[in-house]
Length: 552
Picture (tube, helix red, strand yellow):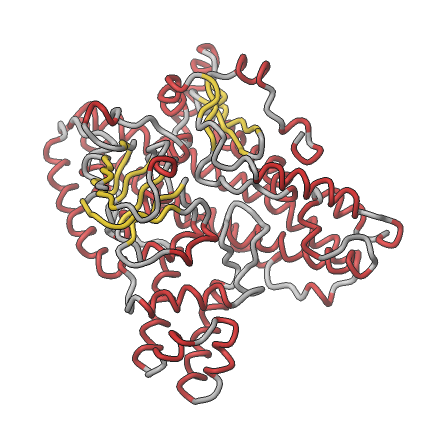
């Protein structure tokens, strides 16, 4: 039973009967989620995944269902019946017609609301709050996740539906598939708020090198770096710029869909390590800055060419759907700050402050133990602390978490019938964030691995198999990153690597979108890259054909 929440648990008899198939969320696993995140995500995230399509009257899907299974999290699609499709179609078309009038405006409006909510939960002096004020703030932060989830999935399903309709139109009118280079080119060359992180890190790397501080960065441990830089004026100027960046991105965590990793505000060695990595490899600019003008020029030329090839009576609809598809790709990365980033960092920090007070009262051994409680347990004990002993509950959950960790790398990618995955992707556009079937078998095309989608280009390099973004310090030169999947916490490493291969992910996955914007080849959705490839092997990544070749 996952952390005393039986409703989250996978029931093989029931769940394989009620659903066609389940897919392991390889983008977010391993490692397993901690209890507090499981509780909040399954409470509000799962609700949001069903809120979005219901508010849109999506004729094909009621959204996702999730289950926790041996530490892994599996997802599926709640498909509509034929009768429901007919009843929902008219309302859905009207709502989509309004959205397609200006697809870009939708996220702009919703982002403004999220920023207002973030202002209430982020940047609060938690230590200055009384116990009851802190409990109130903690629950306000948790309840804000509910609204975050509503906006998240309403935008994702609305823009994503435009994306899936565009993919169908591309295939019907121009015989272009989502795995084709042209599809990648049409959806790349756009800026988003999150890409500014790589720019800030690159600027700090450049400033350090140009200020003659390169040696200090290369020779000093991150824990001692700031004190050494304080010794001279150039170092102090660098620290001022670093602090400006921290004011903007201090909420960053290594894992986004999780809260058991520290924010940069808690541990400033995390961004310092990223900057040191950039300096050691001589990175003084973000690849996105260099590549974007080329991507944008190529995209606009292709748009013009394709619009000429589209029949005149279909041209206006094609153009609107293309804009919606492009907006969905930008939203997919941009929203990570306002949805998965700052709000969950706010929950983490308020939970840890309550955990600190629990520790002072002898209720738990250390503040981080609060992350092994559910949010209602934290709230209900927040005021009557001296009467509660949470130690045995925490120890029980820690043991359960430890047992799940032993199973990493052994869980099946699918539960149920994997041949049904393509039907789930067709029914639910957002499902393609997590999964899609490879376009061929390796035997059919003579490759070691085949994915479902690619970032254009071909590159050879040395494989680095990372099962978690906490292992990024092991990345060396000439690197091809091989991972279960990536989330926004991985983004800085894209400015270092030459290519990427993932087990999971689909047409809207983080790894794919970011690889395109950084101009590096990638193949996603191979299902077994981390099991077939070993660190140190030479590999070729062909994002044009979605193929991977192990060269030795």
